[in-house]
Length: 97
Image 1 (cartoon, helix red, strand yellow):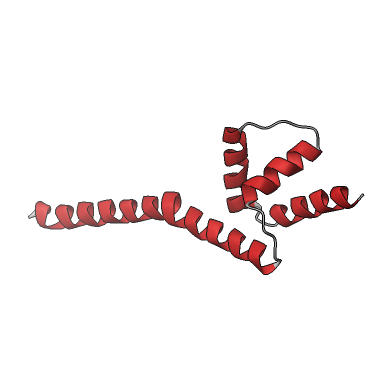
Image 2: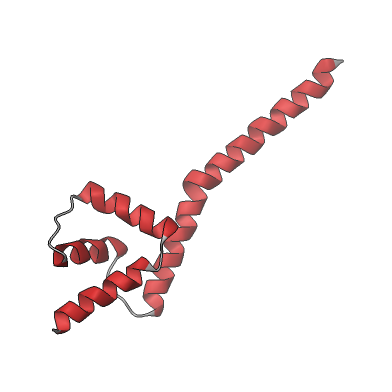
């Protein structure tokens, strides 16, 4: 009798946890990346987010490895997407001066 209640609860818990993990680690990052790319296209910026990060830190005089740039891109993409536009503005201003 207890198995009639416990088995469906376990199945629902496993399906729910699987759905959450797929969203957290795949879908959320995909949606954030798409949003950032659409924003860059909206402002006619032809550079990728990783190019913007790399040039920004080179302008500041800091050398970042490719792995660090990937980590920064993911962080900015998910937590601070407006930073790409701010970094691009700094790069553009320095190139004009």
